[in-house]
Image (cartoon, rainbow over all chains, first blue to last red; front, side):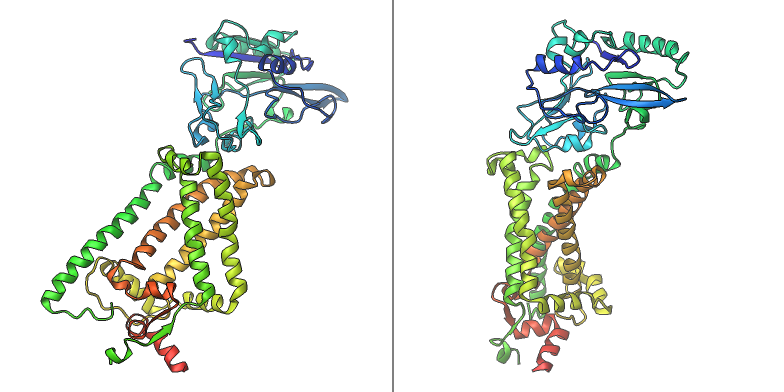
Length: 267
Length: 219
């Protein structure tokens, strides 16, 4: 795969049937988990180490009429991922061209730094296995010319996979169409975190979907990874070197002093 | 006079102070080695000492518990000594500033005139404040990272750089402190003060005149 891909989810077409969630589990061999009603028809509240995609449902009231806001959550596969930057063991990488963000399970130590760094809290750690998991974008399918499991199974065709530029143009065209009836409709993802691989058409503002409006990496991440770790640590060998330097200069100066007959009593 | 005093010794550090000092020495070193592996991928081999990252993390957490408990135990054992230490540290005055002004020269072995010092000289006072503050912040940020599910995400996010900053400062201080307390020619008796608890009287008088006069005057 040598070109950048994109998965475009048109939430205006989503029916919240949750088949994507099931297809994801089937393809990735993830066990079913006991679910419970979170609110309304929503049965999954967050990601787990074995649930990499789920649907959230949000009721929206206008003029005494209720409409649904439905959102398929999974890793956004950011172009500039905070998780990758936070990982202390270099287990997270971007695929060269296609735009996927992947966790190398061999290298992962399950510290969960990525979960804390991710603006959406996507990766989840299995505390027994000490490994962190998230959506792989079905890289194993995509690299072999198949659609991602969720896109393949989506009955209303809300999840579409294709070339980055092509899908983005399609998303923009669809947005113009949907805005005729939903003036607040907008795209979510194409301008976030360096441009995400998974983008959405929302019918309304991100808040109405329970999403952060301006997801970004915390300033603490930059302080930590761009300044402290590459430069700050050098203060330690510097302190050690100063001590070593002093070890020699003090002794040399003492020899010089004793030749001059200076009293060094009390040391 | 020096010869008649040379065998006489004065008590400098109590048992609880020495327990806290050496307990913290051991736990700090183990915490540093087990933690540094996550600071830079180039220090990966440090994790291997403990049998990999996951085990290094387990050791780090256990040591953290002892690291937290030791000063609290020392405080419970000898609250009076603790109070005296901090009272002296915060009696930071003109002579302490005088000490810090000439200390860089003294550090490299130049002969300087140092004003009379209390039990802790200006540098030791600074070390007390900086190291203790770092240790407290290391513990707080560490427990937030450990029990990250119980804290807001922004607190956990800021705990990482704070833990690193305090580690860097504390490690630099520990390096300098260890050297100054052992191989620096000016340190003389100070190592024995923390090891045996007592120092030679003439050394005490020469290095901590105000303290020496106080304990001698008190007798």
